[in-house]
Length: 134
Image 1 (cartoon, rainbow, N blue to C red):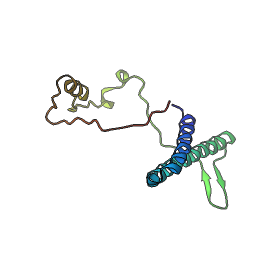
Image 2 (cartoon, rainbow, N blue to C red):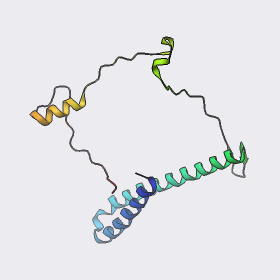
Image 3 (tube, rainbow, N blue to C red):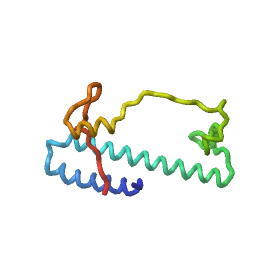
Image 4 (cartoon, one colour):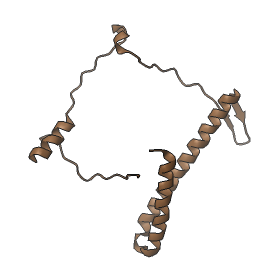
């Protein structure tokens, strides 16, 4: 889901909540909390866009550093990283084999759905919620 769509949706939600808050004064605390969360998301997104634009501009103009009255902005090289394209071609001295004990959550969930039995050492969580953007 693209960020612009999500921000537009959040803006619409903000407007709807404003209308609702005028009708339901007892929910003001919750609505204020939601507003502040939405505003933080909007600020972060704007900051990311500005930082991305500045970085791309500096790279395009081949400028390493800009001095301003408030401070300086500088392009910094990131440490090198390695991408594995084919693990089978990597010599053994550069390969780690991990063995870890891991519960099969899907099997546990399916067992619970089929039998209603909760496996010892696990718990079933059904109270989580999420927002869906459509």
